[in-house]
Length: 174
Image 1 (cartoon, rainbow, N blue to C red):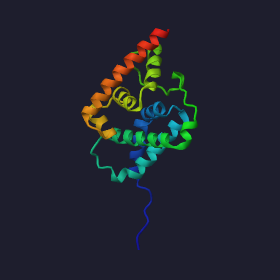
Image 2: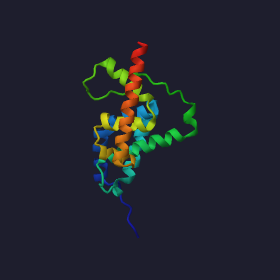
Image 3: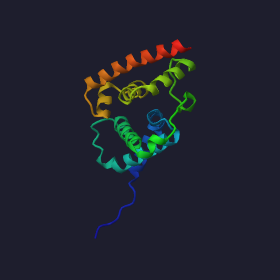
Image 4: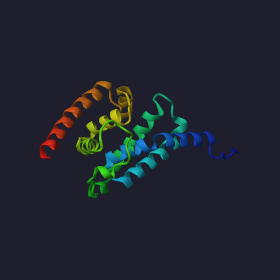
């Protein structure tokens, strides 16, 4: 007869440290991806649930940050595919964004940048968020998105071009 084991304390402790370390950055990523704070919170919670269930199968081929980011992005994609998602009001203002780590931009520049990043196509938005907001390397981004490094580089280049265009367009209206 097989004995039933209780929860593994090492898994619990590891999950707690992962939550402490990555929760706020994953929340920001999910919020920008989903345009809704409650959905983003749900996505982050779902991400950590999936991670907890898969901790024993995590091989360590990538960093925990890359692994969690990939789970979070896949969770957000699944949520966006849901039929009810298209009926939601997804207008986002910079005030709705979760706090961001300190950066050299002043508040008005950071708000303008957040507004245009939200307008980017999903593939470009992903690489911008991972590269600049999560400080991931191109290799980590490639691993997270399941694409090659040259694709990451190309998406970043296209995103920069689009961001420049959108920021100049926004300045023209002011």
